[in-house]
Image 1 (cartoon, helix red, strand yellow):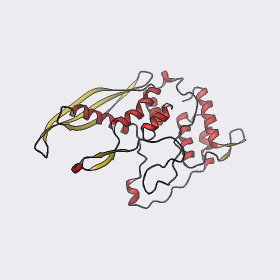
Image 2 (cartoon, one colour; image 1 turned 180 degrees about the vertical axis):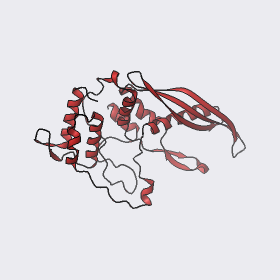
Image 3 (cartoon, rainbow, N blue to C red; image 1 turned 120 degrees about the horizontal axis):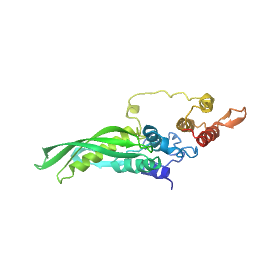
Image 4 (cartoon, rainbow, N blue to C red; image 1 turned 30 degrees about the horizontal axis):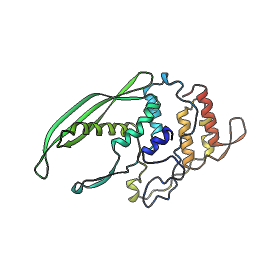
Length: 258
């Protein structure tokens, strides 16, 4: 199993066509094709890649992490959530693949004692963590995330830092859950018109279109089941648009494009 499959499995999904995007009444809705197209070796220029670009490539690897963990707190309620282990299992392989290092460089905790319902005392920690995200070229950018946790056994600080790390990865990575939109049960929405495959041709053929955008186009075409649509390519021949995107992506990668 490759890194992409490992990351997908850790995120609670497998990148196979036909997988329902969520559980529930609408599980029969066709799933988008989240499989990354093979555009060749995009890491050959890694040492010249800025940190923000490397992070965007990590984001491209981690497409979704589902809320498939269950919290049952009795009177505190029950809900599904995405724990820090799921986030680490998804982001770890992607960060290593693209030479990205995420390191905490400043931790600012605050503490207070809180009383429990049964008369006990817990230590509550609220922490603000500054993280430094390094790219393969050695440059970096900083970002922050907060976490809060309480514990009666001296573990409130690591718990709060774990929550801060999870928040950072999910927020800075813009990771969706693929769950049903909560507003979908309240509002009626019309179907968005499908963008025709031929309308992508100018962007695909544009030499300034990045490999990352080509992957996104491939994903958009897959989600609307148009990868097999026949179009007239840049030399006037008829070609399936999905194959055309992959072919041009490989040519860009071989030429050193990003």
